[in-house]
Image 1: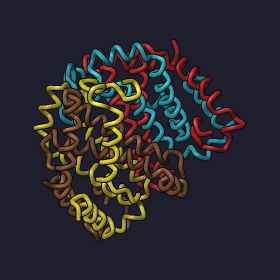
Image 2: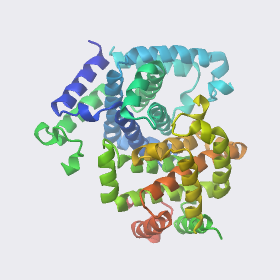
Image 3: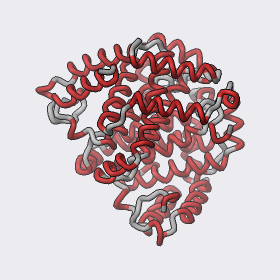
Image 4: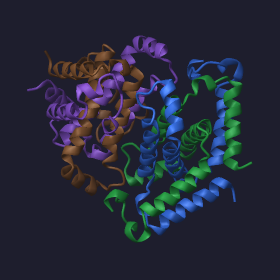
Amino acid sequence: MSEIKAITEKIKKFRDERDWKQFHNHKDMALSLMLEAAEVLEHFQWKSVQEVDKHAQECKDEIADELADVAMYLFELSDNLDINLPKAIAQKMEKNSRKYPVEKAKGKHTKYNKL
Amino acid sequence: MSEIKAITEKIKKFRDERDWKQFHNHKDMALSLMLEAAEVLEHFQWKSVQEVDKHAQECKDEIADELADVAMYLFELSDNLDINLPKAIAQKMEKNSRKYPVEKAKGKHTKYNKL
Amino acid sequence: MSEIKAITEKIKKFRDERDWKQFHNHKDMALSLMLEAAEVLEHFQWKSVQEVDKHAQECKDEIADELADVAMYLFELSDNLDINLPKAIAQKMEKNSRKYPVEKAKGKHTKYNKL
Amino acid sequence: MSEIKAITEKIKKFRDERDWKQFHNHKDMALSLMLEAAEVLEHFQWKSVQEVDKHAQECKDEIADELADVAMYLFELSDNLDINLPKAIAQKMEKNSRKYPVEKAKGKHTKYNKL
């Protein structure tokens, strides 16, 4: 079994032992994914580049917890939607390489539709 | 190499070929993670439970693309922060099992501090 | 002076007494606006329609605090950007009435580009 | 009638002419408030302080539209929840002045619980 699949199975076991599937409709899962991403971002609010780097080292464990929360909602939601996440990533990277060809995109953060 | 590590290496190769590391500071990465999560959620805005399910099937490929975007920022940001994501998930699940013991949390969506 | 302008002046006085303008760049202001909107949304996470209504009544003061936070960032950011918010709202409503004509949009939550 | 109240009445008239109240439950309203805040933030993604300022001037009308969207959801949601927004702001500013006394908070972006 792939690593992501194995982690997803553990997440679903945790969920099902608590009978939480009833709450995990796609809308609330997507909403929760976003709220957890907000908690990651909150770590860097108001901070300069230097303060961000310092904070990232000092609060590594707390940030790791927030990233784990994002990952758990992401893996379970993908599974609930019957989406193969590694395959979806491979396909999106393929698209991105066409939208952002190296010669055009190098050194720029311009969106593809304005390149 | 683990699956997540292998995907992360591909993401970093894509980034470095375009010389984008200069833009990928932790704050903008966290901000982008959140904006991609918003694009997932937008799929379900205003929709009833029935409409959500129908839309999830009809627009599976578009949603897969958005989840892939979330995953790519998540994997790269974790790597940039020197955080081992599978290990972070295992540790968070361990914490969660203490915060949400089966007998207390079963069938409830109450937050741990109000259980 | 208009009501929104008067509130905005109080917010700026509060900010300037604390010498916080230096942190209130547009990016961090927009980021904070979003984080406060997340705190409003968190009140409704995992809740059914019935639970949402019950919670909205029971926690009215807490939700009012979160909405006030959104308002304060919104009013100050608009002012910092030299945007007249009441005028911007009037112009957007004018646009929306063209994008969503009553006869086409009535009773539907379809986005204008799919109407 | 106060300015915010008058704007809110126009928003509700627009909504009711389209029979949209049925979709405007608190959860979807809060979700939409957040998605609109995301669209404001997206304007500043990947940009340096200098680029942010330049973009804010060049795309003032587009940003004004996004801020108007945030304002419209904020004003209507507050009204739907029977929350008087100007009063809520006044009360929150009163709380904030206790949480962030000038002598302690001046020139710092530290959160009140760590001051």
